[in-house]
Length: 398
Ligand SMILES: [Zn+2]
Image (tube, rainbow, N blue to C red; front, side):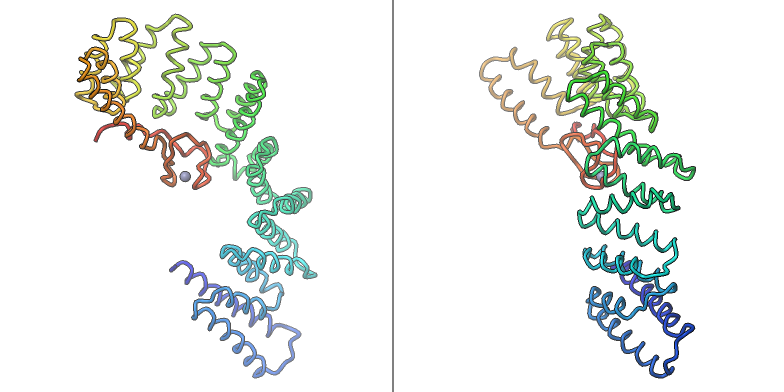
């Protein structure tokens, strides 16, 4: 609210300054007292709207009163943007179209106005029009082309036109000022992964692998690209490559560890190296005893040494690191060994724990705090890429 009030005050000052310059500039020949009266009549009408908490009417009045000239173009642009932010996209479009129709507008203002108009079109859902306008700016190779590329990239992302979005990101990274922009690199890597996912759905795993690898040109630390490559290599029957990609994810983002264990277990078994898998789990338990690691180790012990050894292992670890999945696993192993009446109660307890686990969010966005039960690479709430991460602690008993 305070921010809006501040913005209005700045606008009023800008308007009055621009207006006075416009009215009293060269070529004006009305009497000074008549002009002053006109100015202040209209100014007070606008101000009155503001004071009555009718900012839309106030903006309309100021726009009507403002003569477009080189001194007031920026004020018009600011008012147009303000209208758009207040959801009056139609009016914003009219303001920006009227500005563009003015003869003699210099190139830099023409470009700024076209960019603003493109943003209006995007806000109104008129993506085709926005795309055409932005492509015109690109063809002219004007300084505004970088802004045009950024907005085009957003349009292609919305329309899921991944090849075009990748090309925009690639061109943007040729700008020295943007080369190190991590959010741009992250977006580019995700566009490559989106394209690879689509290709994988049609069954072409080799093409999908090439597209997923391209993600590393944008973001060499991309966790999503490695997870996707692991899936592709699994499809292609390359367990060694699956292990390489998943171990990379473990190093880069240990919070994903629990999700990797089923595929790691399968791949180590395929190359007959479950000993290496066990060593990895034991190291994990000493460094970062997650619920998933406890369960994976329990299953390994059960398959090799039987239920009793596994129960003993989980019971021991649960003392130090109690978790709902650990408790459910322990009950699951003990139920077949209990007497019938005790087993029924234990079954009920296990079902209650599992329901509790289902209610908890499994992922959270590091940027806006959005919580989800499944993994989204693009946060549905804040629209940032790669900010949603698994929530390990949600599984712990506090
Ligand atoms: Zn978010």
